[in-house]
Length: 185
Image (cartoon, rainbow, N blue to C red):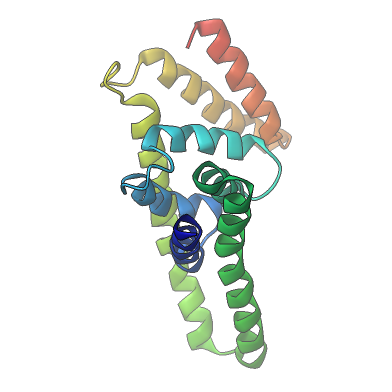
């Protein structure tokens, strides 16, 4: 029973404070990985991220389900998922009711506008943590040139191709997998 209460506590916190969606949950999940629960490590979090990005559904929910399942089986997955999702649902309902009354108020609009940099900072921190966990290991304490090449090709390709035609994320994942396999990464 203790593991389920702990899952509720930890994922409620993540659900309340991870404003901005799935990537905004990553700093909180990295913090959770550093605790002595043994649910998952920082390295397995990078693996969870890859799986969560390539499976249907919101990434934060997928990651909560995975971590909860790893900690407490099927019931743990359900508990962690609900604990992560319920605060967002409640907050959105409250915000909707609030904004309906104050939708033209410049101060309310200013608050939401000011949240944009905070969300950007959380996502940037998540990217840096994923980079560090994925590439900077004991075996490779520096980024391998081929990793950078694959990253650069995918990023530049997406930026250039998106101007003419929208490139589907699944296609980027497939291209990355093919390049990784071809280059022996």
